[in-house]
Image 1 (cartoon, rainbow, N blue to C red):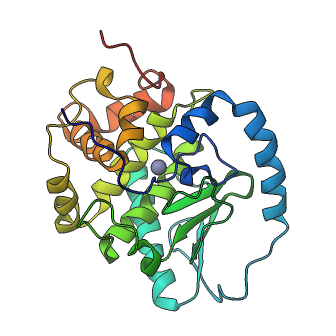
Image 2 (image 1 turned 60 degrees about the vertical axis):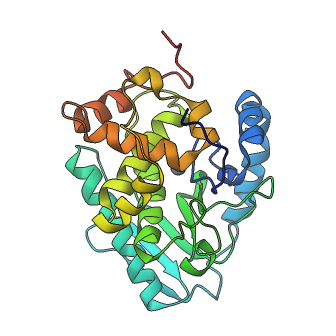
Length: 266
Ligand SMILES: [Zn+2]
């Protein structure tokens, strides 16, 4: 009853890491999952091209986010400072769950994401081979509502930064050899919502009501693809339930939970 059509841009999903695959529409992403080897080849070429590009002159401001190994590049001082706040939120939160947050990264706040495929809007992506994260700036994110009437404000934008950083840090902490998309998205959305200020979080939760996933059997790729932000809201509620939290995240990282994209119904 809670299945909804995708109406919001996808957030980063690192199983298609080097081609900006977060921008693909759900159908394209599902197809990509089954054609990973071919995509990997294409992605490697794309990643190499990116690797040869230095920081654009427009990204004149840079800031090493204190207490992290992340450096943010952007066009304005306030912009990079705000993004650093999102970086620090993610690092502190994931460290509190026991993750190693020392993985270095460069985060670029940009007007347009690089090489997004499929022409579908996305807020951010990652070029894995460069350890480089891209997030659209606030003005551009403001053109892409999370849901009808749910615009990306400054607090939500910091959450989007935290989401992308969480993907990056989680990737360095997985012990499962091939972590699933839902494992990644669970951690990224929990990080995003847990670190947002209360008012911004509740605005999103109100838009996506529910009791949260009742068990791991309910956490599946199909639901994520149908409505990523709804998935995120239910994941957050599941995480907050007593007994889940850091314990469940540890199970996800080890591959003992969320190791199948679409678990059997019973
Ligand atoms: Zn994501």
